[in-house]
Length: 194
Image (cartoon, rainbow, N blue to C red; front, top):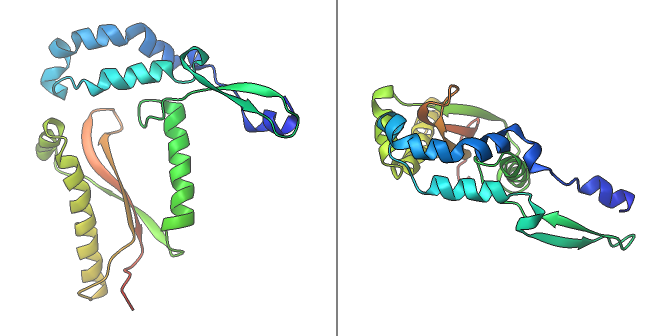
């Protein structure tokens, strides 16, 4: 492989990851005991979890599929294993998606003004509703936007204007317990048509 290609691509060894080994060795037992041990506290078992784990187990494995890449400079070829391209479940793919999103936001969406991070949470008593009705999570992000917009309008003493807002829903807290909340990047101030 030529020097340029070697710098661009480093093959992963997914089985070297402690998280991968943990999932491989214990996920089936976790799934089997979920209803008895965890469902009363964390909600019903969602089938999408098994689907996500199966994709994660195949991520970066040449036996599960690959693309053959040819270096245009030296003509050498090498294999690139397919990835699962999932968020949250796969640390490698999630990191890549986060970096690509950050680049895209910086280049295409975010105005060149100051921004701040906002974290909007809700009382513990209300969190259980979001655990059992995931459709409410989209409304949570919309409500976060409206609350920030209305607060900025009031602080600026205007009736109109929209903040720059990029929101992300997170459903767990520092201790991995259920805690649905919104992380948002918000412009300092409002945008108006004029």
